[in-house]
Image (tube, rainbow, N blue to C red; front, side):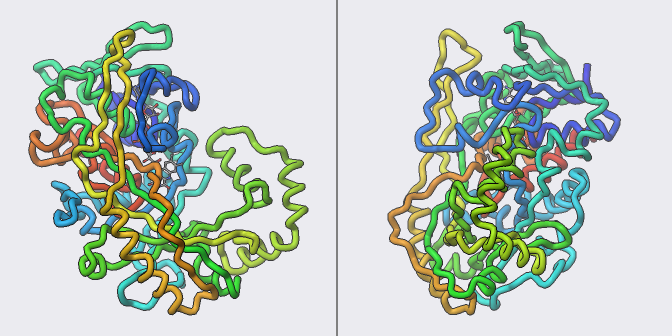
Length: 493
Ligand SMILES: Cc1cc2nc3c(=O)[nH]c(=O)nc-3n(C[C@H](O)[C@H](O)[C@H](O)COP(=O)(O)OP(=O)(O)OC[C@H]3O[C@@H](n4cnc5c(N)ncnc54)[C@H](O)[C@@H]3O)c2cc1C
């Protein structure tokens, strides 16, 4: 019998297994894939229905590291009002507050081997450097920070790997269901590569199988049969381009808009409307950020593909292509790189086309559900069905904020003219899958309690953004990791 069984060797799973092992617990980690993408189809069912949600297909993968093999590694701690929710706009309050979660942000940084510069960029412990700001008023310029590429994939992160040495890791182990005996021991049923079923027992089990996986495993398990909220309240953040930018003075525009390097940590600016503005116009929480579109066959695209291959394990583009692209654009590339070294910015070549994007928080929609239809041939592998949608609330926010934001930016001296795009573009999900096993104070409305323990159980916990009752303004993973570190304390108790 293990002290802890972690189901899923992805972002949350590796983090928690390392954390529990460091406390001297005996830990087993069960991961469905041996390599990226293995067993993914099986986990979605043979005929999944995904509707218009891109992420349910593209925003996750299997294998050690899980989706951290793909993600951008952008960290963004939430503020107190994001936990308080905005009930008048359909955004559920959490049964936890900011003070319950915020101490764990620093713990996450330490466990991932990241410098305190991240916290300084986020505005905690004072400001790290002279990052640009905007005049105080309806908007503020806030910065997210990026985990460097060597630490972004948790399967390769040295600080995590050092703690995994004593963890029993089983790959190719697809977990079907969890059950619990009266004594509170958890029994985890899994299927191995040969199709054989076996059971692992543990004092505590933490589901860290991603938003789709957590709800699916609980749907198969007896422990959660009486929880009507299971599968409900699936969410994402949504994004679309709202303006194009004509650059008049590249150096001035880059100084305002390009991601900056602060003591080696990259920081990206986001233009955030304040709560007073949101309330005055009944807007959903949202923020705008710059997007620099570069030609898909150009030098910047080749260099990005080269760097990305180190994180994802995808094949590297041929060196000859990269060199040829760089040669063709050598003048502007040298200029962009020279400036980036001097001013500590991400290089932004003048051939790139800047746009302004708007990202919006979705209201909690309880009828947007993860459900599974029967699969007679393989009863343990039902077909995912997801009727996700965006609504008029997101469109109304875009409509109300765009011209205000464009006017505001044009009133600043940023070296560019910003032009509103016609509102034709539709919102797309941005690969932040949340909800489905939501946290609540009562089993009538939620699947897990404020400690992330499944209602009615003594030993079954859920880690990851699937427990979010509402999605905050942006990037969920830092907050999901902080909650996972908090679960670590609860189960160690
Ligand atoms: C391209 C991209 C960019 C992103 N960028 C950002 C960003 O910059 N900032 C941010 O905050 N978020 C970002 N995200 C979202 C972020 O990656 C996810 O929120 C996070 O990785 C989810 O972690 P997780 O542990 O919950 O799931 P995962 O990392 O997906 O791990 C789940 C694991 O469980 C395994 N599993 C599933 N079912 C079973 C089963 N039945 N038995 C055994 N194992 C199972 C899977 O194989 C997988 O390894 C991005 C996502 C994508 C795709």
